[in-house]
Length: 212
Image (cartoon, rainbow, N blue to C red):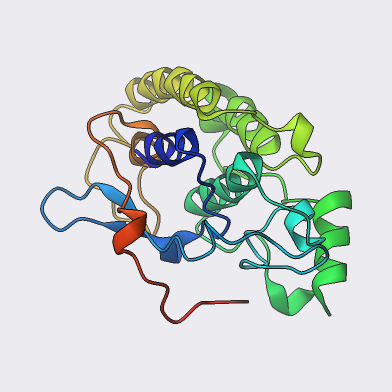
């Protein structure tokens, strides 16, 4: 659903520029994710001036370059990574300033995912890692270029998750007791095509911006 929503606004020539967990809310009635807070969407960056949230910003945004859908795709990748591991992808306390964070994102990136289960690693590990790596590639030309490609990749992964569920005899499909959502739910929320999930940008006002 998040990808569908982002595709919708991108087709309208709008880029979010500050996609992060705090800007994705769940509706009370059906639990569908809704993208909110388009306060930066219509704002053109002054050259060399950073706008956004550092932990989720793409390397080009950290340099103060103009953002496009590939910058939002980078943020989506960081969010997906955090949904899977249940922790922050980039801890800002680890970096002295934005320049150090930029260097880390370009030269190191997100740590490889450790599944802690051999079967999970074998069935979906490489595919999920490849997805994360393409979403968060330092060079925006190496990332996914549009949301349709991401959706197709996630749909393929969903099939592998179904196989994994069967192999684990219901371990992932049973009531989940851990701190993280089951893997199947993570990918469903990213790619479900049931309904639009974009808050009307005209009705959203930016309040309490979180920079950091």
